[in-house]
Amino acid sequence: MGIGPYRIEMLQGHNWVPWKRRMSAILRDQGLEKYILPKAAKPTEETEGAGKEKEKAWIEGDSKARTQIELAVSDSELDYLAGAATAREMWEQLCNAKEAKGRVGIMST
Image (cartoon, rainbow, N blue to C red; front, side, top):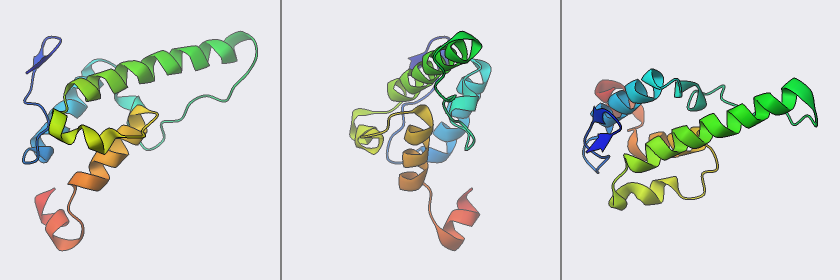
């Protein structure tokens, strides 16, 4: 499967760890990784000036990050993205669904 110039396998039920690493690399290379990081937050709404431009730029960047994630997830895994409004929320939902918890999780990451 290709995302622009990149070729990665779509997220399936069995390939979370390599997919996560490759998807992070793609987002990082495109300058979009900041939208999936824990501190990713939309700038506060301001009605004029630089604040409004920052908000617009954030919305556009987040939209691009969401698109990259959605295009790299197989149909069978799309349910994990349901209800997510931002790239960060999509990423969190995937992490929560796919990452093992406890000792097994520590050993697999």
